[in-house]
Amino acid sequence: MDTLMPVALIDDDKDLRRATAQTLELAGFSVSAYDGAKAALADLPADFAGPVVTDIRMPEIDGLQLFATLQGMDVDLPVILMTGHGDIPMAVQAIQDGAYDFIAKPFAADRLVQSVRRASEKRRLVLENRMLRKAAEDAQENLPLIGQTPVMENLRNILRHIADTDVDVLVAGETGSGKEVVAQILHQWSHRRKGNFVALNCGALPETVIESELFGHEAGAFTGAQKRRTGRIEHASGGTLFLDEIESMPAATQVKMLRVLEMREITPLGTNEVRPVDLRVVAAAKIDLGDPSVRGDFREDLYYRLNVVTISIPPLRERRDDIPLLFSHFAARAAERFRRDVPPLSPDVRRHLASHTWPGNVRELSHYAERVVLGVEGGGAAAVPPQPTDATLPERLERYEAEIIRDALSANDGDVRRTIEALGIPRKTFYDKLQRHGINRGGYISRK
Image 1 (tube, rainbow, N blue to C red):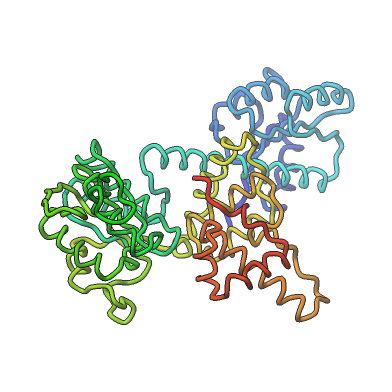
Image 2 (cartoon, rainbow, N blue to C red):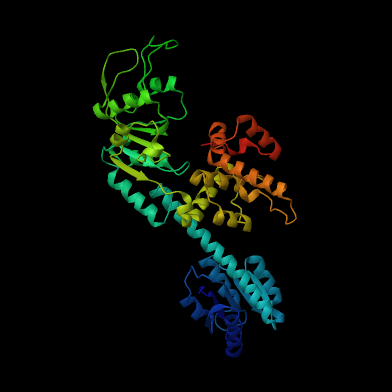
């Protein structure tokens, strides 16, 4: 059963107070009634969860004085004034000063109930936004992995427990779930934080380049190697090396990487010199490397060498209670970056947050929040116009296809290669569909 909405009622007229309270209770409110402003001020907390309804004409402290005091406690607390005919000019002035509404006596019950209901909804939204902002601020300052669900609390506890050890870590999680964030936290919370945090996406480099990037090379080691280059592994010595999409690492490079993990030494291309390295390796994979059926040609011995500690990041759809908090955080960050106000949540946005499956996880949610703040049409499922009931099957399929493409772009930061791989269509077909659906890929490219 839903909790009744609270409302405070102040009126020194006993009979009118009882009748008004009964009207509000029948409408579904939980009424706290007071015979004067002094009693109400002594009892009401600053964060009272509902509106205040008060008469103006009262002894000792009148309704206007009460309103001024309540506004000093919380400027967003809705106050509804009940006024006699002669008090209407004062009530109008109070509205200009910030009162929520005034109701002239005698009033119809429906008029009072509707005003209180609207004020209650406003109060609920204000307190909800305050809670989300506070939680987001606390999360940003103290808990970089935002979330209040038990699974996220457990994840943070694990990270704290292992951060200051030197064990290598394998991070498993879907695209956009925050694998690099986990790696950065392990680095920042460890004694290695004074060293370099070096990241390399193994899936973003061709096989001919990745070994040079990892191990470095001497001048003349191969055609085009005009000067010596320090590799990512050596640059990470004293710090942390993060290898993203390690399942994409070429087989030949896997062999050399296994030696690095076992011996903590490298031999750059073009030299026989062995150089010791002091680093912690955090590797991330989008697939379950422990499952031989999906591991493919990824070396089993390298998997077991990396798998000293495995951390699994839950997808966003498995921690839906964190979505409002995350959205609030990302929207506030986007508003600051774009110098715009955070818009109120429309029913469409609320519906999308509650029902979307978020295949791109936290990254997709972040981009969606940016588009909401910018007021961009055509980004995310919330911007897809509702389908008319008389739409033909081809028209419905067209709209559904456009939504799938937008989700894929959002999940992959607008990256063409990853998006067409996720969609399983040729590049030319992809661009043809973008043009047909009027989708601007640039709106999905990460600016981080």
